[in-house]
Amino acid sequence: MALLLLLFLANILTISEGTCEPGIVKQIHLLRPRSGAGGNSIPGLSCLSWRLAVETNNIIGWKTVPEECEEYVGHYMLGKQYRKDSRAVAKEAFLYAQSLKLAGDGKDIWIFDIDETTLSNTPYYAQHGFGAEPYNATLFDKWVMEGAAPALPESLWLYNKLLSLGIKVVFLTGRHESQRNTTASNLKNVGYHAWNKLILKEPSKYSGKTAVFYKSKEREMLEKKGYRIIGNMGDQWSDLLGTNTGNRTFKLPDPMYYIS
Ligand SMILES: *[C@@H]1O[C@H](CO)[C@@H](O)[C@H](O)[C@H]1NC(C)=O
Ligand SMILES: *[C@@H]1O[C@H](CO)[C@@H](O)[C@H](O)[C@H]1NC(C)=O
Ligand SMILES: *[C@@H]1O[C@H](CO)[C@@H](O)[C@H](O)[C@H]1NC(C)=O
Ligand SMILES: [Mg+2]
Image (cartoon, rainbow, N blue to C red; front, top):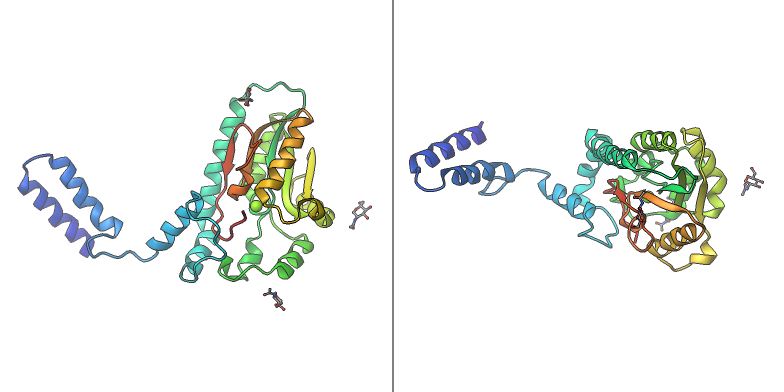
């Protein structure tokens, strides 16, 4: 109510001033109450800014979600916005894939990351502060070995669309080779019924290396084998940066953790 009154007064002021560039002045007055300036504070805005900076890779190398944003991230992940944001990415990826003229020789591949891309660990993170608690490898691995992660529905939708376009799917994940069977059955159980390759990390080969290094190397090897990476989708920038990144990359939201 107070906001409305303020808007109303701001409009009257603008109109009565009525000198130069009234449109612009009016816009500025209209924007102020909504963006939280001029003494108006909007709860949650700073966490939204934090999330935006994370998604745009401006904030990097962070270890945990800021404590005061735990609830915000929880609401985001379990509410409609996470799904809407994911849907926007999947739809855009499909429109792109559909627009391509493909050779049809089985060498056109789409790379999907797994965690927070094709599978969702939200059930785990919901019990661990949505990323506000420090990462616990023991507990997380235990969850992975349950093989109970649901699909991110938007990615499953895209996966099926890509297959129907004749595009082959390659999963490239930071999960370890020792988690192959569990991961494969988890993928199958939630609807990813077929793939060209499931590439997991060989810890001995990549010990001490970043995800950017590991994933770039594996993509390079795929291209050397004659595959064409037409699309590449992941929730981490480290899925999409480096070399041999593919013709287009698609970033899914993930405000819960950061992997370099
Ligand atoms: C991980 O969680 C287990 C079980 O709660 C606990 O015993 C262990 O100390 C934790 N590890 C770290 C590094 O926090
Ligand atoms: C994984 O499954 C394959 C065949 O299904 C089996 O031969 C292999 O022993 C399994 N590996 C582990 C680590 O369970
Ligand atoms: C992918 O990029 C390469 C290199 O720029 C280009 O030659 C190729 O036509 C592109 N493929 C598709 C399907 O757009
Ligand atoms: Mg991931």
